[in-house]
Amino acid sequence: MIEESIRKFAQENFSDKYFPVIHGETKMIHPLALIVKRHRSFWKRPFAKMEMTIIEGLEKFAKSGGEEAFLTTLNKMISEEKFLIQQKLSMGECYQEFGVDVSGGAEVTLKMHQDLGDLQLGILSQKYITDPDIRTLLANTNLDIQKMVSFEEHELLLITSVIYSEKFEVTGERKREMELDAGIEFPSIARILVPNASAHYKETIIPHGVAARNVRGPLLFKCCRVDYNKESNRLEIHKGDYVGKTVTTTRETGRPLKEEDGEYDDTVVNLHTDETDFPDFTTKEDAEKLEIIKKAVLVTEQTRTGRKERIRKYLNWFEEALIVDEYKLLLEEPLTSEDCQFLRDTSLPCTLNSTVLDLTPLTKEEIQGYAIAFKRLHEAPDEKWNEIEKTLAGSE
Image (cartoon, rainbow, N blue to C red):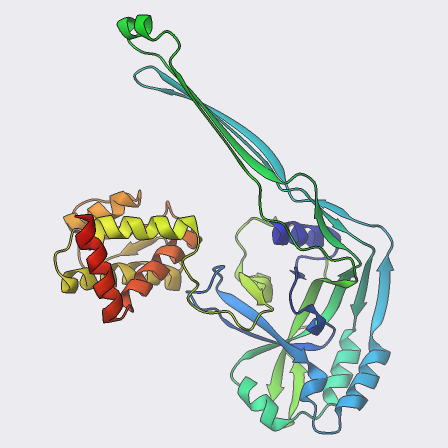
């Protein structure tokens, strides 16, 4: 939600091409820092099609002896502006109430209230470099061939504008509350015996704290595509692209992004280079998915071979959904009764002998969660399977 609030703020005040920066290794975010964009592993969280890794300032890739001259020229070309108004961004508050009459006499009222607090920013400033200056600097910068060779096959970008804030602090009472009232109307005799039958449940969740910053640091950045010309050993702004002020569009933050949205489309900014492709199962949702798999797949199969075959089968389903970015898939083999049992346990619609797999009730994050769970099981070594089967035997 913090990133979404910052994206919306950027869209309304600057343009929809800015990427938000939260915390992390932010010192490397400055004009003409080099970025590598590549396909993001389906197994990384949060889910996204692409990721951008900020490598270092372009001066680090200049030919030996050229770093100091590059920085001297760059510093002369950078322009800076200040915005004196301090900003306070609401990260969202909502209140919802649902009333449901259930057949048989039950009346259920569900109340939900969520307040994510406010993001307090300090005085904002911007550093940027213009299109003609970038082209001039790139044309005059001879690069280190050995350092650039690893980037030849990747899409490259350069940061062209950075917006800074002198403060970054989440304030307010952040909480999420859910209250359930169920007044149950019994048949006449039961009403005499139990005149005031009802059920009440209330839960309050306080979100984790957010790190604060009271020094000037990057809040947003914008970039442009560049190509590495091996013959001239220089970077060039991608043909047809230009660096400059982008007119703000009316695109809503929450709507699906189109292909023409370019490098902004479904992309995660990776400031941490020590991410793993397989996060540990640490969330409640992960444990729930494993429990469903255990009951619907592992327990119902009698042999390890049978369990592994079904795990591989379901892994292929969820992996394909991520690859083709489709929620309905055509299957080569029709759904079996065992498949339908698993799908029903995951609250998914299914029809016996159908060749259509419907995952539309699931979000991308949930599909990714099942894919990760099945991949973990699929790649588990024999000693792990021995432990799993001991657990299954003990639960019978």
